[in-house]
Length: 174
Image (cartoon, rainbow, N blue to C red; front, side, top):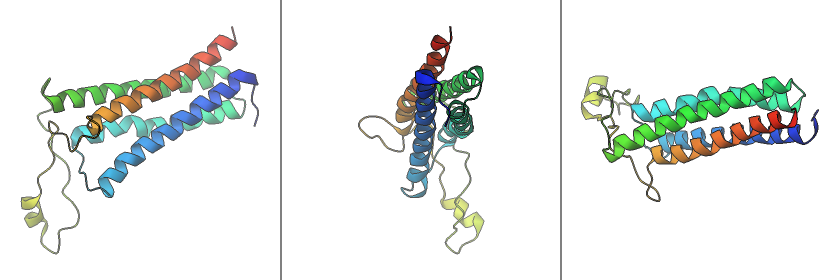
């Protein structure tokens, strides 16, 4: 590992924290879906996109910082990861506002695929029983926050870490 002093170490730690944080956040969402049985609505699924795009970006930032890549590249990748998390923050705030009734949600919310297990019945019978979740009703609240609310906090923290890592690299090289 080729670290260029304190700046390189801070960037490695920032990129690692963002990568692990993204993986844990989306992994938790997938766990609630597949193990807990919480079916995501359209907005829930959209909130995962910044994480799916951001994890490879954070991995590249980590590799660049850890193996002595150009400082500008590492900073750019950290800024991109931070920007993706700011996008996720915006999506989470929007979804939370829809859940609290502060503004209207999308008109096509609830358009998710039916479960694959039809219980031995035909797909049309399964569709009759399946009611997709609505974006304006929280699947559950934990400590007063819905999943969208928790995503706001996770996105904010990860954006702050990524952008702090990018700024740390810029200050040291002036």
